[in-house]
Image (cartoon, rainbow over all chains, first blue to last red; front, side, top):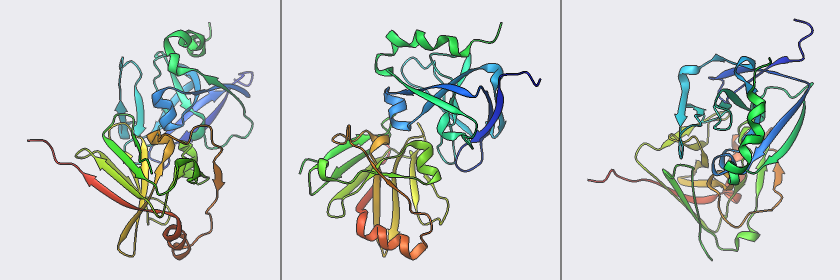
Length: 135
Length: 144
């Protein structure tokens, strides 16, 4: 296990009811999106495959919001409203974790790029590789 | 002055800010507390203006933490942080989250980072009395 390029990082919502863990490399590619949803929640995306994310507490406290195509499952803590992660429409086989909800940024370099979600159809294919499991 | 309108993502909570000065002259604050940072919240208020918040039945989820003297108004449907209100000497005073409601007139502005750590209840309420704005929160009735 020691040769894994990933380290598990913890995070959660504000009230502590929902907790998660995500396995990340030291340098992380992250996206700041300007779509109608992300612009209102301030979500900073770290997209990972299914195997690199796990909910460790409070799955039953998650509320789900959908709109438009309803493919994306926007999840937030029903108590404090914080959206720490969700199933993104661009990567429904993986997860998008909110970099703002990680407990500690220590040991992580976040390279945040702008993603033009206002023109989602033209740009989403550029994210699809991020949720692919290793071969 | 032109009133500024916005809403949460699903539209269940709508806000109208009636300022006494132009939007460009209103403050834009980036509070650095644990709650606001997880949302990238940017707030504004006009003590000489008014804030009206209209919500569909059951749409407001009130969240408290820390000193528990503030209700953070969240949309129960879509999770958006819309506004914060505090009861101070019989009046409801509030700030609105410009980011969560997409209020027009603030685009491209650099917010002022704010740190209120260390305030006690009295200091916090005093500050808000000077900066926050008279706020009316109305929950609409279900239509017949």
